[in-house]
Image (cartoon, rainbow, N blue to C red):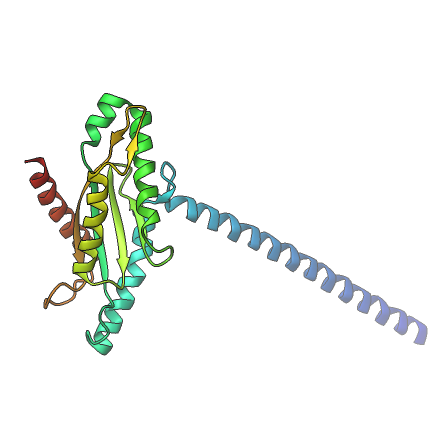
Length: 219
């Protein structure tokens, strides 16, 4: 009986060890599978945030970029007031001038080149990670997010880029078609008014101001 008892204990221990080994192997497989799924999810999420043509953020991506920043800025304002200016955030709405004419007269390839060239031009003049440029719903309109800059300084900076393009700084196509744009700026803080922290409203204000400017530039 003594040997039988020892043998049964040995077999029970072996079965337990075998079960633990299977559980460990299963856990390792699940960990590897989970890591792979997380990697694929990150790739899909990243792709869903990008406009493939110019390789910049799309509407979904820029919304995901700006909302946490607006929320943080609002929390800081509630806690500390506006004593930390120039902490601010500006939404700039931009629209390429005469884009339909470029598309109709020069063709889709030149129009696509215009979109990509303009996106690259704007990217070169802003801070990676701090600011963001996005194409708004696959058209010729763009949204630019600028952080930690006074409203007036943002307007001055964008106006300088506008003047550069008006002077022919960016051309596309075999005929060297000069690109230009109109813009409108809406900032969380402007003058003495209370902060505006709603992204949709900021974008709508910027869009409205851009359209007023565009109408004036056509005259």
